[in-house]
Length: 338
Length: 126
Image (cartoon, rainbow over all chains, first blue to last red; front, side, top):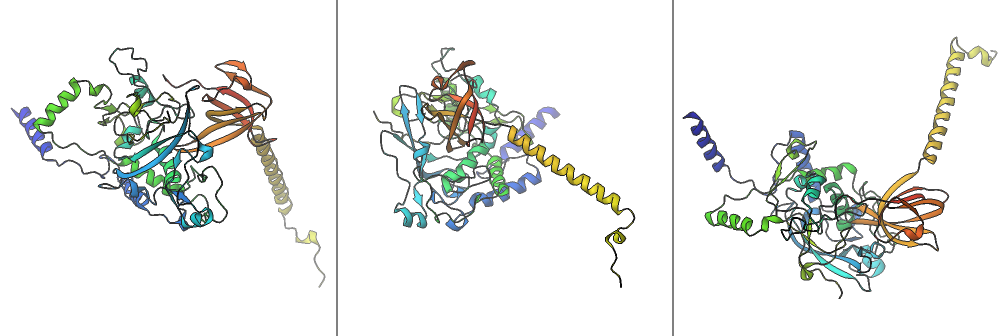
């Protein structure tokens, strides 16, 4: 009799635990990790000004300006602009780096405005594709980062050999590594994504990204960017990175009867073929990230959803596709010239 | 008062200490020279995607970077640079836009002077 009673008490107790609110850290962090999480939140919310390194081109003056709703690390309503040029003959998607791509910043510091008379980075002329990129939440991204490449590759079936009508394929970064973060799953690791975001989104250089973005491919005019490089110390960057890494995914609300039925239908009609209900993390130096289940409803692969939603793809996965799940953000604003 | 000769300032054991200091200095200079030679001899490696190949200028442009902070490196291809495409010896004309390559380079005689270029096999299916 005691066994079932314990199970009942445990079930009741777990039912009484309120769902974790967005913005809280992963459970199982050490005290030192929780301290870094809180210090990292301060870095994440720090507002930069030109004197501390902002710009000269930027999309936001802090990480939390975009990842803001309802907490730091949540989604935002900002839509940034990416450009690329696709060559059908070779299948190469050029991110137009030498012309200011792939991210076209939407704001400029007063000094740059005075020097060049622009209030944002100009979109390169010519036959290019532009795409809107909405701000995703980044809750639970540390767990996604800890999913082994092998797990992603094991799910890939680019030629639909199993005949289920699904042909997910991994993207690869420019150096050939498997990608997973960012729209179209370009970036291989969370740390690289964060380092890139500081300089691309805010114009803040770090020891990992020590050079500024160009102005449409041209160098920054003299005197426009007064702060010395790197504009953020390695430790401050590492704290911000830890904040993002240790953010817990939000707990699902206790499902209603309708939600339970919906979950069954979701699986029955094949949605879970791409939107995998769970992935498993691998080994990690952080115990809270090690061998955990991630309920992110993604396979971290690209899926060709047809011409209306294709848009351009950065990286090695030149044939066009859209990744499923929450790890990528994005919108249906991709456009390619005919 | 007569000024003491330099020899008279030498305390017992000073001569031995000086010899040791000189030996240590020589060793440090030698080590620095060796390290300098080693760093000059050690080529660097970079992996990226070929953006363009300019045979007339003997240059390859490579896309690299971190996250979405992408950068283009222009690599000078010196005569005699070993080029391999899918494990087969080739030339600059064998390189194609979009290929992932690993380039071994030195910063002499020009910055980013390639010694070898080899395509990198894809990690898993594409």
